[in-house]
Image (cartoon, rainbow, N blue to C red; front, side):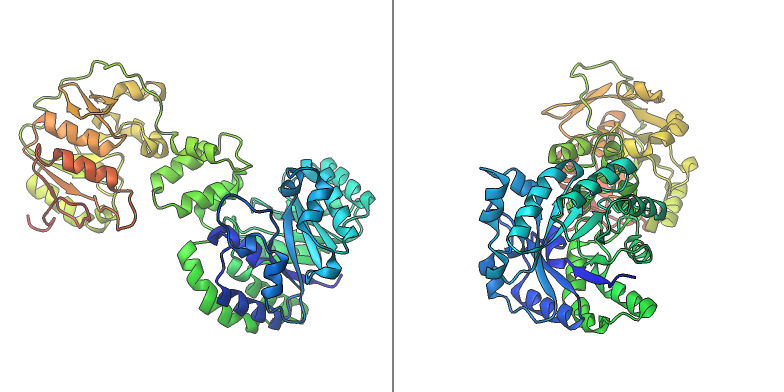
Length: 531
C-alpha cells in the first residue's frame, strides 16, 4: 500500500456555502487543529483573478493573505485553480499562470491543484507544465469522471502521463453518484497507463463519500480529500474527523482525530446548522439523474422555494441537460409549472349556487393539517361543511372531502398521477389539463392577469396560486363563510407567504374567512376545537 496522504480542502470546497468568507478566528482555530491532527496537506482556498462581486479571502488566497496567516509547521499548504479561470483569461494561458502565481521559492505554498473537465485537459496540461516550471508540486483533478467511457478515461490518462507534468492524478465524484463498480472501472482504466499516485475527491450526495474513500484506499488510491464536517459544495464531502477515525482503526494510521473534536463542535457544527450542508433526499435524487449539485444547493438554501417548487424543479431538471450549472436553467425549472396558457377566456361551468350558502372548510397544505387531523375530522362530522382540499391531501380521508381544486402549477406536477383517481371530485380549469387526460367534474376556467375578477364561469387572478382560485370559487359559489385549516404561513424573514397574504387581503371584504388552526397570516383566527 502506498503511503496515505490526507488533503483537507475545507477552506476551498466549504467556501461554496459562505462565499469563502471564513472568520479570521475560525481560520486560525482550523489551521491549528488540522496541523495538530497531523493532516498531510491543507488547501487554503482557490486562486482567482479579481472579479465583479464580493468573495471572501479564501476565494483568492493571495500571497499577501497567505503571508498574514500563522501556518503551523507540519502540513504542506496549497491552493486550487480552476482551469477555466486561466483558459478564459487574456492574453494566453502561460501569461495568466504567471500573473496568478509566483515562483514556489517566493511563496509559502508547496502545491497547486488544477481542476479540469475532460474537454479542458489539453489546456490543463499547459497550466500544469507552467506550474511545474515555477517549482510547485502539481495535482490535476479530473472532474465529473463517473459515467465517462473507459476509452476516454484511458486516452485522457495517457495524455497526462505523456506530458510528464503531473505529480498526482485525482478523479472527482462530482455528482456524488459513484458506486463501487464505477470506482473499480475508473481506477482500472486509469491504471492502464498511469503508474503514479492517484487521488479521490468524493461527494456525499448519496451518502457514499466515506465508504467510497475507504474503498479507494483498498484499490491503491493514496491521496484522499476530506473536509471538516464534510463542508463542501452541495451535499459536501468525506468528513475529515470521521475519515481519520476510520484510518486509525483500520490501518493504524498516524493521525490524531481527537485534535479536531473541539473545532468540529465549537466552530463547524454551528455553521452547518446555519448553512445546511449534508446529504438529503434531493441530493440523492439529483445524483441519480446527474444533476449538478449546485442546482440542489440553490433549491435547498433559498427559503423562497417550498417542497412543491423543489420537487417540480427536480422533475424538470431530470429531463434536460443539467450536468453543468446554469442559472437560467434553474429559473426555467422553477417556472416549469407556470406554463404559457392562452389569454383568451374559455367557456366554463356556471358555479353560482354551488356552495348553497353553506360553510366551506378549505384544507391547506400546512403541517397543522396532519397535527390536528383528528380534530379536523371531528369538525367535519359535527358541522357538515362543504370540504374543499387545495390540491391532493392525503391526511384527511377522501370520503370526507367534497371537492379538490388544482390549477396545474408546481404542486400538480408533483402529484399529477393522483388527480386521475379523484377527477370526479375535481374543480379545475379543463383547458389546463387536456394533455394530461384529466377531465375535472366541474370546469371553472382561469386566467392569469393583472386584476382580480371572480366571474360565473371563470376567474381572473394575478397570482399562479391555487388558494386564489379556490377563494374565487367560494365567492362565486355563494359560500356563507370560509373556515381554513392547514394555512400555517411562514415565519419572517421567509417571504413565501407573501402571495397568500395578498390573496387573503383581497378576499377579506368579500368572504367571511377564519383560520381554525395556528397561522402566521393576518386573518381572523378561531379554533378547530370550538365546535
